[in-house]
Image 1 (cartoon, rainbow, N blue to C red):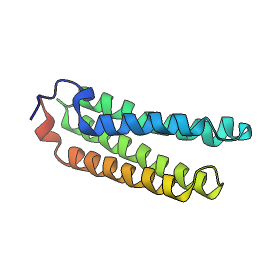
Image 2 (tube, helix red, strand yellow):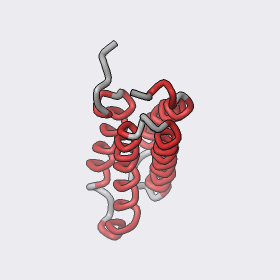
Image 3 (cartoon, rainbow, N blue to C red):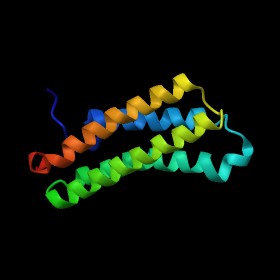
Image 4 (cartoon, one colour):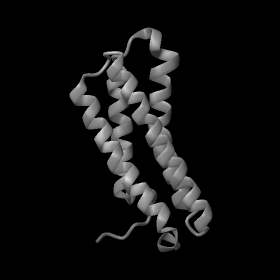
Length: 124
């Protein structure tokens, strides 16, 4: 297994970053009237999964801080899932795309929960 030197080396970070970029590209097609609501919110929350994870990784010498950031990242991922449901119900994205995104965020959430529950393991 490769040594993890940075948050960018984490599979969960790579997954979350890829999802955030996918959401960015998909959201370019959302209606203009959604610019300051759904489009802005789904982009912010998807990016926040990554930024909280990066911040938490740097705080890993403090298990409580690490865990708190994993929980924040997990919460942002759940928020993205809610915005994804809105995109489906507003007919901006089809059922298959939204199901795929939702399932991939479930994987991210699962990895974040495990990391948060094993904070001591992540201490440098």
